[in-house]
Image (cartoon, rainbow, N blue to C red; front, side, top):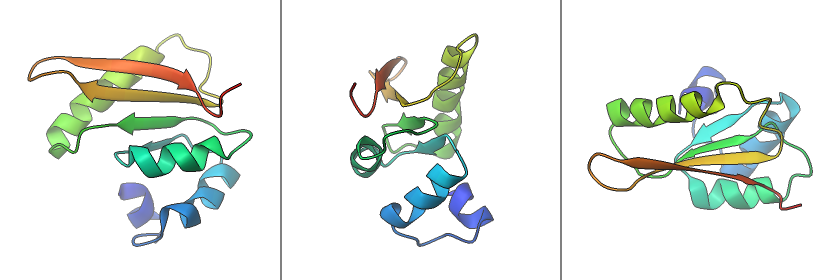
Length: 103
C-alpha cells in the first residue's frame, strides 16, 4: 500500500494502522474488506472507509477508485460512512454506501 510505504508502515498489522488513520483523520482506501470493516465498526467516529472489493490489477483498481470518486461529487462528507465498489461482471460495477458503525 502506498500509505504504508510513504509513512514507513509497510508490514504493519491492520490494527496497528488504525490509530494513525484515526488520529490523522484519513479516509482509508483498501482491498481488505473483512479486517477493516471490523476495525472501523469499533470506531465511534471516523473520516470514512473506501473498499475496492475485488483483488484486481492496479489499472482496474484505479478505474474502480474513479467510480468511488465520481460518487462523491457533490457529497458533503464521508463521516462514519463506507463506500464499497464491487465488480458485478466483466463490464459492470456497483457501489454500496452505508454507515459504520451502525447508528
